[in-house]
Amino acid sequence: MRYKRLGTSGLKVSVIGLGGNTFGRYVDAPGTARIIHRAIELGINFFDTADVYSIGVSEDHVGKALADRRDKGLIASKVAMKMGEGPNEQGLSRGHIIAGVEASLRRLGTDYLDLLQVHSWDPETPIEETMRALDDLVRAGKVRYLGCSNFTAWQLTQSLWVSDKRGYAPFVSVQPRYSLLDRRIEAELVPACRAFGIGIVPYSPLAGGILTGKYRGGARPEGARGTDQEGAGFFDRQLAGKDEAAVERLAGWAEARGKTLGDLAIAWLASQPEVSTVIAGVTSPGQVETNASAAEWQLSADEIAEVGGLVG
Image 1 (cartoon, rainbow, N blue to C red):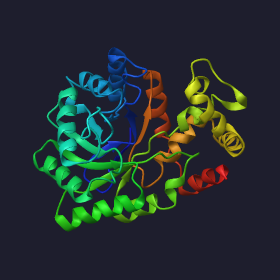
Image 2 (cartoon, rainbow, N blue to C red; image 1 turned 90 degrees about the horizontal axis):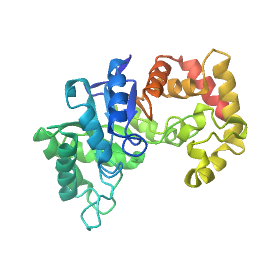
Image 3 (tube, rainbow, N blue to C red; image 1 turned 60 degrees about the vertical axis):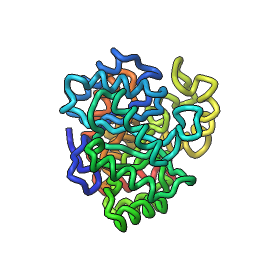
Image 4 (tube, one colour; image 1 turned 90 degrees about the vertical axis):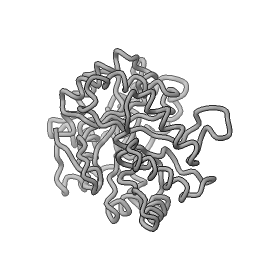
């Protein structure tokens, strides 16, 4: 397993991480433990979850799986999303951040988070209040590093400016949606991360399964996300026109090199200089093994550009 620094921090993370959105949703507690234990055997040390994932169940499952091997895993969680019906049970106010982190620590059964990420921008709370609360958690030893998720380039920049001005602990990472089929962050967020030394932690690296190749040729495998009512419309839109043609070009490029489309999707992200770790949700230990193997494929700068050009 290769490791990279999380941005310009001193924290080293495995180039492939594990996303926790499937835990408690598609995978029960024993299944989560099997997945996480296999991941650790493969050298994966980055486990990403959030309080809102199955309303705390994902954190509970991750905590139980790591209970007797806490030193083997870096736990990243998030705060901001709606966790109840009360007016203060969401957002990035000081009150919700501190209460949310305390609840996450209880569910995870740990004294600290390796990485706390604010899950989204909160337009109703001054960023100074948010960054001060986060800094206090770092100083108290309950959080070791800070990150953000779903931030735009200007939101990230403003947050870093406040931290620098006030002497607060800064964000070291950002978690955006990023894949070969969704490269919108390359316009502004990626250059900002490059300039400020922020590590990128892409989520949805396989574009919801489209980049596994299982929907090629109009296929809809039984049990796949694209077959249920919720996902069908999304997948039909993604697989139409440009994306469908791009998937075929990418698959052909990978297969000519003895690899799969899924291998390429993960390897392309893991080879990006600004990307620290790629988190993918899985439902079985076998999927962890596949993703870990894909992350070991290192593309050259020329290959990165060539593959990017296939998307159009």
